[in-house]
Amino acid sequence: MKPIVQISLDLIEIPEALKTAEMAMRAGVDWLEAGTPLILAEGMHGVRALREKFTNTPIVADLKTMDGGWLEAEIMAKAGATHVVVMSQAHDETIRCVVKAGKDFGVEVMGDNLASQDMIGGAKRLEDLGCGYIIHHIGYDERRGIAARGERQPYPLDQLREVVAAVHVPVQAVGGLTIDQAVRTPEYGAPLVVLGAPLTIDADSFKSADGNIEASLRLICEKVHAYGDVIVG
Image (cartoon, rainbow, N blue to C red):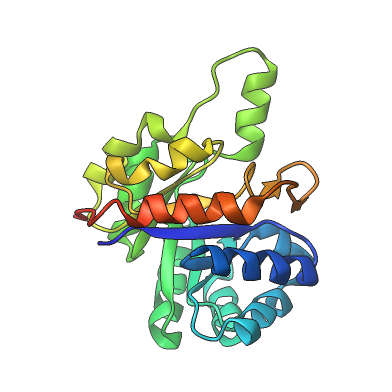
C-alpha cells in the first residue's frame, strides 16, 4: 500500500477548516479529517462543507462513536464522509452496527483503540469485528496528565510495531507524535500518516498554527509519498 497523508482538521469553525484544507490539498495531502472538535462544533454541516468543496477527496469523520453506531455512521455518510471512526471501548454490538452501516452506505470503518487496557488486543478486536483500518491512539488528556505528574508519557510508537503485527489491515498512529515521528510511521508498517498538532493546528486553541505551514506540509508529503509501498497484513 502506498503511504497516505491525512490532515486532521481539529478546528471549530467551518471557514477556517476549509481554508486549512485548501492549503493542505495544494501541499499534496491525500485525505482530509473532520476532527472531533469540528464534529462537535458543526456536526454533519462541517463534513458537508468539506464534501462540497472537495468533491473527490476522502473525508474521515472522527466521530469516536461509542453508541448509536448505525445512526451516527449514516448521518456522516449522507453528509459526504468516506470513513467513520468507532472506539474499541464501545460494545461489540455498536462496532457491528457501524460496520453494518459502512456496508449499507459505502463508507469505510476505522477502529480506534484509545484507552484500551490492552492496546494490541483492542486493535485485534476491532479488526475481528469488521473494521477496515486501525487507529493506534494515545489520548490528549492521558498524555498531558501523565506528563504533568512528571512521569514518562506513553507514545504511539511504543507499541506500534506490535499493533501492526497483530492485524491485517492498515494502521495509523495518533497522539503526541512529533512531525518527524509521524513521517516515520511507514517504517513501522503503518502507511496512514496523520498530521495535526503541532504543525498544522494549535492543540490548545484549536486554531491554525502560525508559520509557513504550506511549505512544510509540501516537504512532508513529498517525503512520505517517496517512501514506497508499505506491506499490510
